[in-house]
Structure formats: structure tokens, C-alpha cells
Image 1 (cartoon, helix red, strand yellow):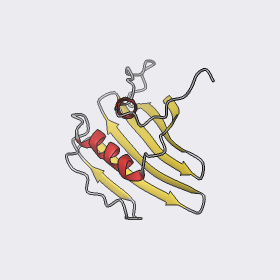
Image 2 (cartoon, helix red, strand yellow):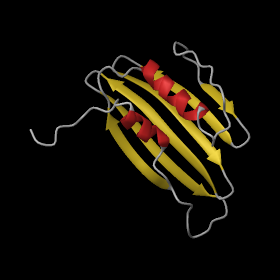
Image 3 (cartoon, rainbow, N blue to C red):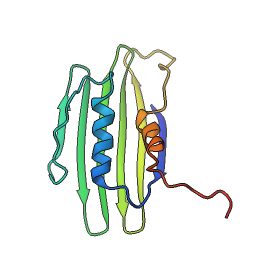
Image 4 (cartoon, one colour):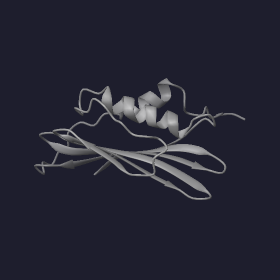
Length: 138
């Protein structure tokens, strides 16, 4: 079940290198995923995958003449559900943004899903001020 879906505009100086740093810090510094190191070459065109006991982390890339996508997915299985968070860095000729989706699939099909929290990656984006400040009144 889709829990959260958002698209955050990013500052022009946000790069795929900063995105990789954000992804790796998010996963390796979390106590939830059990992944202590991610060795991914930003210049690689290969997909990447690493697993721990209850988590999987993936990186995929796509680029053509008009668009570049740098995406990650983290999947975590706990006693109640399988959580997946997708983060996609999207760069086209006019803008940069981060697309984020959080999904929860119940394992035991209870009528009530586990409590969901705002993904850490969103908090991190705001904290390090990568999100473009939007003018409310122009």
C-alpha cells in the first residue's frame, strides 16, 4: 500500500554525487538496515545491490539526451510488514527534483497497518537544505 509519495524540487547545485552521498549515509548510518558499507562507483553504469539479514538496497541509473535518473530502493522486512522506499533523483534540461515513495505491504494481513513515519531521507533533504525554497507570495 502506498503510504507516501512526494516530489521535492532541488537546488541547481545538487548533483548525483551529492545524491549518492545522501543515499549511502541514509542506509549505512541507520540502525534499521544492517548495511554498514556501500561501495558504489558514481561513474559506473552498472546496477548495484547489497543485502543484509532483513534489508536489500538497490541502485539503478538511466541517462539519455534529455533526462538523467539516479534511483535507489531500500526494502526492509520486519515482523509485521515489508517496507520499501524508492528515491529517484531526476534531472532534465530545466530542473532537478527528488521523487520519494514509501510503501508498506502487510505480512499477516491485519486490518491495521503498522505506524508509518516520515522517511529519514526527506528529513535529511530538508536538514541539509538541498530542497529549493519556493516563494509562497510573488
